[in-house]
Image 1 (cartoon, rainbow, N blue to C red):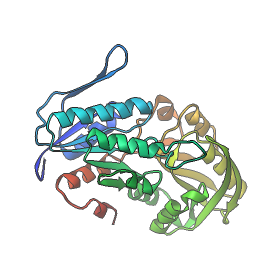
Image 2 (image 1 turned 135 degrees about the horizontal axis):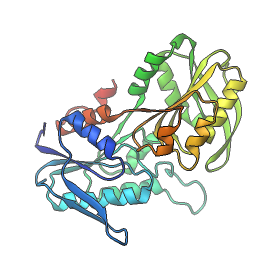
Image 3 (image 1 turned 45 degrees about the horizontal axis):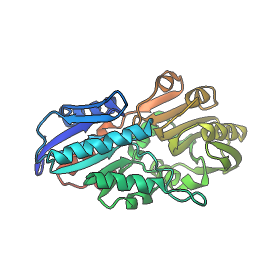
Image 4 (image 1 turned 90 degrees about the vertical axis):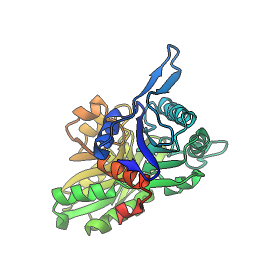
Length: 317
């Protein structure tokens, strides 16, 4: 497969090699030979081992844990490609770290998402492709074209195959996620409810109330990121207490830090479905009620359309 102006080169960092390989297979292309390794003092060294002059290069790299290491890999790979005369460089970020720091949360605090966007732009990236940004306006933090892909079509297909929609209700785990939940509920033609919560401090949440009658329904929680898992566990408890039959969750990015996988495994959640935008840890893989939804086909389609200079948004029409 070739780009409209030059060949396609896929370069993978170390954040999610399995996803990178699956994307390459979807495009029927090999990953470009490259070395991304550490010196003894943990400095990152990159060497592109193929000719990329004049090519349309795509760097596949989630900035997930360890976020700073993977971000630096992205920046250094970008510099290596730019100095190797790649015609265009697209950063494919299935998970964009630092997205939750998208505004000043208090006095004398940073807007780290904007800083990271500046770093990526200044490194030499020409275009960014990402998946389910925590806040859509982060696209405006980049001074280069940015495509925000959506996992919703994959989730809709999976939900339609597995649930009786006449007895299903979509739930937003907080007021801030209502627009996302409403969009999915409209796609599958189900009612919507909201869990009202109070967050006392980062990483902790307390469910206060359920807005809507969930009695007798199979409830599906929808969100973009699950980190500690506290919100989902508390929401599941609140929904069951209000008469929900079962509670499932569909979340795009399974950060699942610390003991989150064990917390989910021991909760009243029937199943947590996450995408493989972040490489699952052993704990996540072994959790009996966590399932992974592949997104390689979505990203490979978007890469193919970008390389051919065709519409990406039409993937979601």
